Amino acid sequence: MFIITSLKSLLLIPIYSLSITKSLLQTSLSILHNLFTNHNHNFFSTTTLVDHLLSFYFSYHGLKPCTINLHDQDHTSIHIWIPNHPTTTSRPAIVLLHGYGGNAKWQLYRQIGPLSRDFDLYVPDLVFFGNSHSKSLHRTVSFQARSVMEAVRRVGVERVAAVFGVSYGGYVAYRMAEMYGEDVVEKVVVVSSGIGCTEEQRVEELRKFGGIDRVVEILVPENPKDLRMLMDLAFCRPPLAPTFVLRDFINVMGTAYRNERRQILHELLTVDSGHPCPVLEQETLILWGDKDKVFPMFLAYQLARHLGKKSRVEILKDAGHAANLEAADGVNRLVKSFVLDSFV
Image 1 (tube, rainbow, N blue to C red):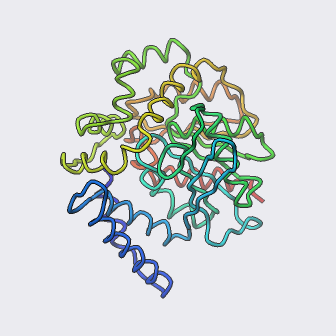
Image 2: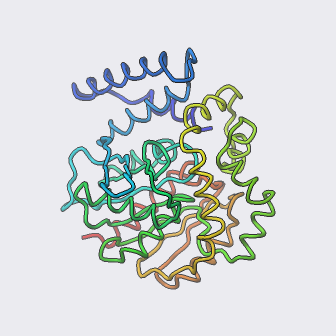
């Protein structure tokens, strides 16, 4: 998995100022507390350690976590990373949306450093992932899109230069663009997201993986075997991870809201899949790994044909479904160029 990569990159971060030192000390104390008092009574949790290091990494790049209570009847609460000092008039705002597995930190950390140099980043946990939750019975992509947009507005952002979504997050990004239009969401970036596949294609893809129930087992894993299968599907070059690390990840990151995540998948693969795919008015960048084992590459071109001249496809070489991690440099370069091209 990307645990080893996370440790390598994070342990090389220099400490330049007193504020960074203070943040490191606070994070270290939090790490120690969680490592020795975590709910599973393990003496040491690799997942907890990496999760806290990722929090420090986000903080190092000028982001801070906050919780936005939407005050709706469902008591929806969105955990989101926002800029310490947003510059809404001088820098574009980008919303980054994760897919299945872990939380926003684990899936989007390779975008944070490079993109934070040019953009104000807003990085939420989707509802029922990470620290975002709700009493709502809604499991639709539209519910996710509304919740994210409301949270972003509550922190003072009325218009975003782009919304960037990976896999399931791509569905949410696409729906946000449809619901709020070009005046609110200027551009769209979808990464490895099977938007617009036909009913026949959906059935074939599900059959390939053993049916909808088996897909749910893999995407919401309860054991190391299924988590390893998920890694094999997500990565072109799956990183090696011992079984105890995989089990620890499931115990720490995969137990909360498990039923809700299953319901989201069933909704996406049955009810939501029957909705017509709208043609967006926004410019759309479609990024895909050439070795994606989840969504075949032809779906990228199929979506581009559906969207017409305002879309373009970029294929990342030697990258799988998690193209934003395996080909992060290429993804970040393309996103930066795409968003800044017309920003004034």
